[in-house]
Image (tube, rainbow over all chains, first blue to last red; front, side, top):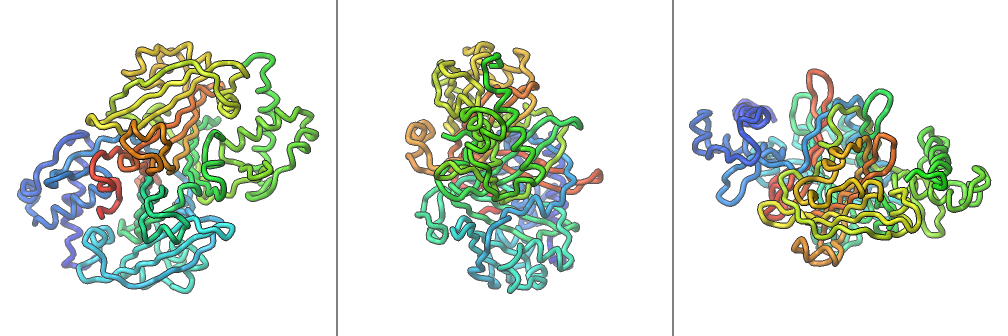
Length: 267
Length: 267
């Protein structure tokens, strides 16, 4: 929420300054950032503002903080590539085509400080948490937990959440989806989620985590989607066309025999 | 290898015909394909040629085959997006920046039929298999197994494989890298790989599997990269720019405390 006592503008300034330094190479991959104290002095802001800027940079994957919280510029293993897309962002974010949703819970919650910072929610301000289970052909394949800030939660028709995606409901309510970050990783299945998707705690899961922003760069949805490992793969294809190079991104759900079909080569 | 007794041209024709039918929607998502017998008759080819075309379609993620091998058009969970990129493909495929490689083995092998089909290698024709272990800051984080067809293997200086990437060596040898498919998924760690990357069999791993093609659409490398689950995440960012929408793809290795830094939100 953008209110006058919200530290967002200040923290944004610090965040943008450091991000620029990283992008331009003044802070190189692997370099240590100045300490929190030095950043406080350099930007004339409070420790809490510095930390919020660093939280944001860490969330974006630009820095990591180890023991002692000393921040370091991330060294990417994959080169960054940048490309323009024409497509509707909502289409790119649709992870759930062809699945049926069951709303497990939808309730207002007080969340921890990192999630508050992610959603730019003030202290003591509740956010809406929606848990859903998605099935394909009657078999549960993914669990999702969405958090949205209060001003977004107020626009959501909770009854409609079983029938359509949250982003589609928000688009209908006039929210303009303009940006997203998605991170994909493997992880051990958390014990709360495991029985819901037919796994044991610690079994592999494929996790897609994302943060969606509106056209004013405000966070509107944080989503954590947990897939059975045998039910999802994410594909990126690059081919030549007459017009140049084409990159195609898609994900496919594969319910059934583990790995078969999820693999490029049938093994 | 493109020799006159190679079934590639025939299988390619069947493959292209079915792919077109899927792309144009004549074969819809979820639809069953004609049986192998019907495809044989329709295209006037042998069963082995039909199977090779279906293997290729399955590898591309366009179809799946269940029990009884009845092929079905895949229903994507994520909408496909297509975009043009300017960047060098080699940069997009570089998964290993900042890691040190140790060559575990490099040897000529006879591989199974699916891998032969993937690499368009004839029966009885050996392929080069290269296993490497990659570490960052002295800690093993990924195992890779590459397979290349004989005509590519002959161009590789095996001594140089510890110092640089295989694709870079091939580019230096005049091979033109023109296309790639990558699939990412979670899986239980295979028991042969687990001790090499400090995991137990069955622990979660993040797998990147890819097939790289040259400018004549010939397969030049199949790679299976197995990452410790706590050491890699793949990120896709979409933001607005003055010029339009920008999509940025990157992966970052995070060695250290599990999940911290690998997560969008610090938890």
